[in-house]
Image 1 (cartoon, rainbow, N blue to C red):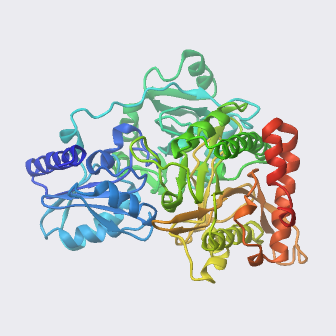
Image 2: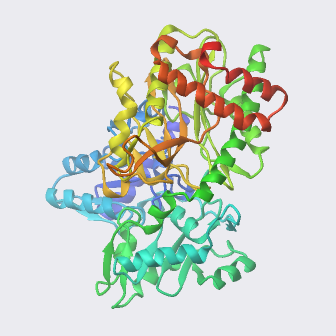
Image 3: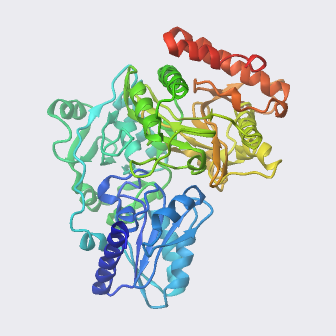
Amino acid sequence: MDSRISVQRERIERVREALARSGAQALLVPSADPHLSEYLPARWQGRQWLSGFTGSMGTLVITLDQATLFTDSRYWVQAEHELAGSGVDLERIPTGAATHHIDWIARTLAKGQTLMVDGQVLGLAGAQLLRAALDKAGITLRTDSDVLAQAWPDRPALPARSVYEHRAPQAVETRAQRLARVREATASHGATHHFVSTVDDIAWITNLRGGDVEYNPVFLAHLLIDEARATLFVGAGKVDAALTARLNADGITLADYAAAADSLRALRSPATLLLDPRRITLAFRQCVPDAVRVVEAINPSTLFKSRKSDHEAQFVRQAMERDGVAMCAFYAWFEQALAAGERITELTIDEHLSAERAKQPGFIGLSFSTIAGFNANGALPHYRATAASHALIAGDGLLLIDSGGQYVGGTTDITRVWPIGRVSDAQRRDYTLVLKAMMGLSRARFPRGVLSPMIDAIARAPLWEQGLDYGHGTGHGVGYFLNVHEGPQTISQAVPEPQMAMQPGMITSIEPGVYRPGHWGVRIENLALAVPVNTPEAGAFGEMLGFETLTLCPIDTRCIEPKLLRPDEREWLDGYHAQVRARLLPLVSGDARAWLLQRTEPLANA
């Protein structure tokens, strides 16, 4: 048996032994930590440790005789490969927000049996759904024990990276200003206290950054805000004395990371506590005394940070220019190296592109793991090349590169597809249809306040017309030198909710795709800023919004089938390339300049 597989089986058996000792019949392992983060510190990567599945989204359920992983179409091919022989079955679900695992548990466990899950990593909203289903099925839910602690003896410790300030001019508001905004919103809910666990919210409110979570400049902490002061619960030694003094001057007191739960237990009436049920775990909710009134509503900071100010937008534009310079330098090298017959792999691409970004002013790190997928690997939306498994860039086909950077003035995320050798007619068709989809939403006009899932179909329409579709969302919110995936807006097939309303200042990705498993994948992605626009009926039917494209990098025209583009679509593409050329040309020289000039030629000349 493969050694990796035997390790996974042995770990799952250890969990089963721990379940048996506890008198339980199943364990639920979500992809989550006490902050409900998307990207997890190693300590809370229990799902990956047990199953071997490395995708960023998935839910694992282990019973005494079964183990099942639930994940969506972005990861099906990857999961099939990584789970093979492990004893873990794959359950395919339609979206990452699906609750199929709850139905499966209710259907699989017998009445009177017990499911265990660590309440410290179980979201409150998810816990409410889970408890309702299990109560109906007569199944007991236990959330007071961490089974992984018994089965994982060498579990990683908490990260210990230092916390630092996000400073002016890129930090355009002071901590005091942001705390005042949050307090005002808290009071509008009739609350005196507000507890925040989501690390990007905390980073935004405090103007602090860190390195505890890979690719996201955040740190592990909790924050309790009252009417006069705030307490930041953070690991000892992570904040130096000088920064501690500045925080204290702004009304923020430091306390030990582990003391957050006790601070909630210490609350007394007439305190009223504002909590976001989708951004807090069950364990913290259970700490709140019954005598304390609780108001459930979205974190005010989640709404505030989604709407970038004009000053922040200007810094983002500058970050996009620096990112565009890195892309020009990389692609100039890449095309020359390819033509010279140099050996280039998917790993080589990651190394060279990351190195070019690292040369740019204000660069802090990558915003996610670079995806460089050639041909069949490009058909895996969240593919990651490894030393053990990667492709050589040789022969004919399509190369998909999805990458991004963290800069002190913004966060970037861009996907481009490049021709390698000969491109087939079928590949040109897919590429052009995806381009039409991306342009369609980029050019759209919509009422201010429209719920973001409602505009998802605009991008899909050119693909649906040809019987094509893709299994991921069209767009996600993007932070300001924060998480590359940010809410509350999502341009997807999610169920629309009031907090998803599109507002000026929101930055989202626009990234439709087509994936041919085993053959190739196409995804073209820009980031775009929601801005007010004038229309012929301006004002008569309310304010209208459109998108300002922020990303600055040529879209390769060699893969286009021109006959599929309308004149207005050609005009948009030529206009975009003219803007890319005008913005980047003063910043590049040599080979990068020559490459930029060549790749931004009007379509008729390409």
